Image 1: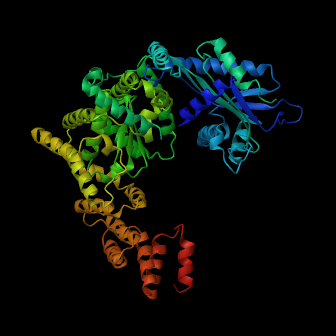
Image 2 (image 1 turned 180 degrees about the vertical axis):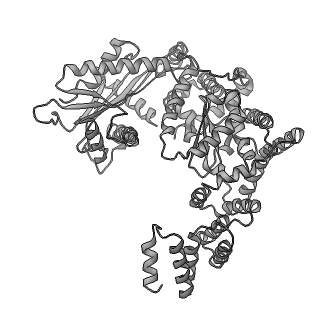
Image 3 (image 1 turned 30 degrees about the vertical axis):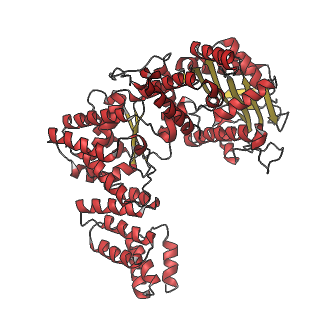
Length: 233
Length: 390
């Protein structure tokens, strides 16, 4: 389901020749007096796969592990030049019950997918929301604020697929014989910023493109920049 | 939502394959059996598969549906060790609170056992039969074979359906979806037969009575036959060989092996600690005909068990058909006369007496309930009944 939406959005964006589309409720972040806003980076949800000739993405553990490390580093670097403090989510941090933080991470996954479905595809728009961007994890998110002494939480979800040799042949044949464009590897993902006072999603950015490479440091930096350059500060 | 569509696509391709276009796809590739301490390389398809199920496992570990009772977890782990002295250290069992007959095995050694299976097993040998079967999936790497098969079919399929490729491929569910629908793994019938045979051999080697495996299926067939809505939600039936055939094959094989223990007493000691909870979950399914078959089977083992009789009364009360109130009342009375009846039977009896305008009798039953369970969550409402003279 998500993949279908994401692929559809990816194609849409590719045709529109832009990579990202952002929704935001604010351009400036709340801050405790005189301090830079503090953002906790939640565990990244990243998966890299190889697209087989038949179009099935085959997960690659080695690439995924590398990408997790590189993207984390790239997000840190990206935020160094910004007027924020970035902290890494610590599962063992006192205060938040382990299960609650796990539930929040899962809830964010569900909310993020709903945003993709209802906010990015006009035919699935919710009549009660009209054009408003109005999504929340609920006040329970405040538990993270207390345990991490942070103002915001940043969630990142990425799926990155690469064209295998077999797939490349198929794409060529499909185009040559039938004039059909088979999708190749794609980089799709989203980042969202949650206000830990209210639980509301205050900023959301979708990235979908047919290029990019999370398997090397330069590519990861490029992705982090594309995802987060519009992040309010 | 997408995966079933994909499956039907694969189904269609399979028949094309049989026409000779994809012979290699329809021949099942056998993977090298599992070895102790095995871990695939991370740059392989198997490594990718394990990576995905490892992530699923981290969620299962923290699941709210997990039964964390240490005694039960040790007990299950011990059964796995008996059945698999060679590989038990690489497998992890998770007991989940789910009132359905099922268990599953992931390629990385994560086994999930539903609480509904515990409720349905009559003895340890029957539980071991299902666990042994799941171990068979693990040792033969059926999950990996299944993934490779799906990929091969999709590869062949793209040649055949090039014209439909844009729609079909765009809609393809990813591998995780394909493999992890509702937490179940569906294996081919050949895999099921192979796992059945391995399970039987491991049972015999561990000293369990091999006939228990066919009994499990016989019991399930009986429940199915009692169910007016035969369409079972269990994923097992979608992929497993016809139950009857499977039951008979297992029976025939067990007759050749024979011997072994049931370990019924040991099982009863463990199940008695959680059975009331499992029965409550069972009743929430509102499949009263199935539940009655189950309860009568358990009662045949221990006829004077007040807890089982009480839950039979609960089935009548909830079913609430013609004559069920009278039946419920008689059953509660029988339960209270037997040993091990929970205090809730007094409350249930009191409610019926109240409806039947037998106020003195109802008051007596409610008082008895509060005497036996003074800290009951619903004590306030029961007290209010008593004060309002019922």
